[in-house]
Length: 117
Length: 111
Image (cartoon, rainbow over all chains, first blue to last red; front, side, top):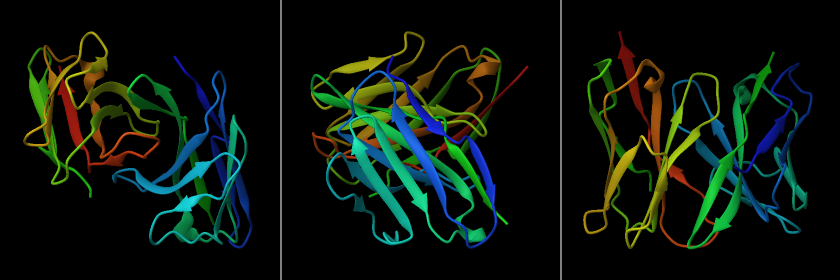
């Protein structure tokens, strides 16, 4: 099956610093990737849709200047949390979309746990 | 629009069966089922498309009622490894649209 990696798997940072999370599709090309955030014991909430070569589309309530998304190639999307604060602490998961016939299957990365002190 | 899952939680003994339901107020193109264990990413279980096409693991079965916009995941002869939180994700149209996840159903299988 298709494999998606994320790096780092976890990160601890001080309040006010920026953190970059990478999402890579290892064995397929993904024109579209999605970024989700999951707080403890809650569901995955879509943050933004990342399209290769164009600006990301953000969900309502997600600050695009705070969560910078860059999809520079068909295998890599990055999420940068700028000026992170403790309330940004969460589990960030990316997925990459692969078209198979009539549907698009989403393959999830292993997630990145961000802790902001 | 977030789909509604039921039940919120269920406890099973090994070997018992369970059904998890997912319903939407919107017309759906596809329903995707995932299982997530604590601290890990969701793992794909099943996809059901409008029109009857399905893809999934051999030991998992599910149904999709297109008229009612409801899907059910059937877990039979449960094993300890089935424990986790089950999410349904819905897609309203074809194309590269994201999944909208339900709140999840927490399943615990005990010996």
